[in-house]
Image (tube, rainbow, N blue to C red; front, side):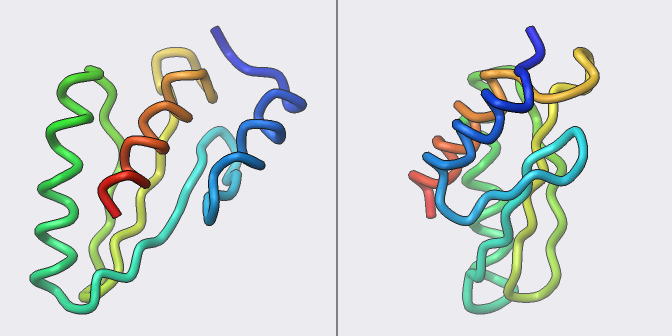
Length: 91
């Protein structure tokens, strides 16, 4: 079920560094170098597979940018914020 704008803003308040980008939430993580970025991206695979919910990942040398949205719902759901919290725990 899609979240309302108010619910999205409230949930974003509980996630440090995440921001809304249209129908997605996003955060960039500095992992120090390319190897750190690739390892971090690889670490995201486990939680994403467990949830059956897969973020968009962009690697630019030391930075991994993560964007999460529930494409099948056309916007943001509770699952997006759960995955964001799991990714934060990896960082």
